Length: 466
Ligand code: OOG
Ligand code: NI
Image (tube, rainbow, N blue to C red; front, side, top):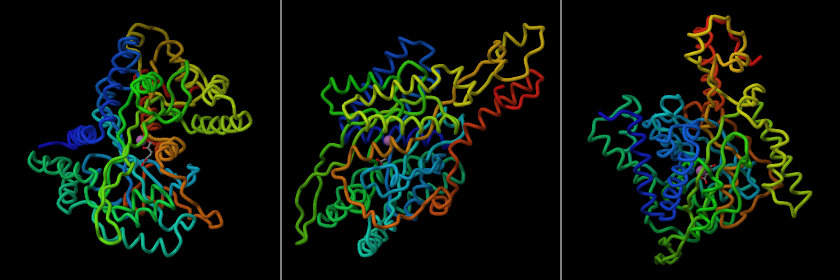
């Protein structure tokens, strides 16, 4: 029998193997990431593993897919459900992107800390919004929905095996093998000819719409390894002659602790595709739809920490607009240094980031004195150790930046129309499974650890720092 987390780890590894075979620059990215990680581990020792063991970080990947209808999204949820992954978080890329990106998204990922430690594979999953009149007029919407209703992304056999793995939390060896093969195949780039005029009609509205609704299948559009020093990775990739996007998305980095998520990518490469012409003949063309991305993960922020992050992003935008010649990263680093605490201790004291707390073993046994009564003092006086909680989610602005950097054109948007409001509740309904609040698991880990500390030290801790 193969249990869920082994299925998840095997799926991530096979997907990575397939992608590396088909998109060679991704293999370079994985190789360079591994080199950087080995160097960081050598230089920083145990400190390098503060946000995840080197085993976890080396195997860690996220992928991204895009689908066209709620029914397709429900099937995706069945496949990832088989791997112990649930939808977490709601991202509205229509609002976060300047170009036309008519999708709303969630991320399928393991939720429990033990599951994340075993294998944290996650997939950023976007759903097209044909009903949004800013992007699609009634005629195009109706032809698009008809096209989408007529395609089948996943063979019934794959879905049956997925349901079985989801219900039984394991599969016998032979079924597991079959499931993995079918699942990887479903996310490969299809060789089916593409109707060129249909694809181009959608592309005028949005390259993302064409990528989703212009073809009869879906595909992984990027796969992302995790790196411990993304600035160093960016330099080394550029030195190897691989053209990276202009900037690293997310917090600017710098001397303090790593926060949230920093990401960068290389541009999608032109790949040969078969194109069907209106007269039925098939020609050879090329499309740019698959790219590579890399990310560095930092500490998860509380809602207050996240509000600070969002406020600083706006401040950077304002200053960059006022000083167009200035270097954006330098601006951001200056603002960060001014507003963001530069140590884990301060982040915890101001309740801007999540930590789990653990009684220091020697301290409790040795000391005859009475421990202080708040978690802050316990940490300060060495009774308790605080470990940072790693950020397991995504960032809408960064995601929009990643989408945008790979679009062939701006697309178009009818600003005279009112957009449709979607939210996490709506997406839950579309998937038929609850889209989880991304803060809840961090909050739970932190508060469970505080309860445990209280129990061990015989204290009634209320969870606040002071
Ligand atoms: C997804 C882009 C978002 C990330 O890492 O923020 C993403 C896509 O291009 O489909 O993967
Ligand atoms: Ni990504």
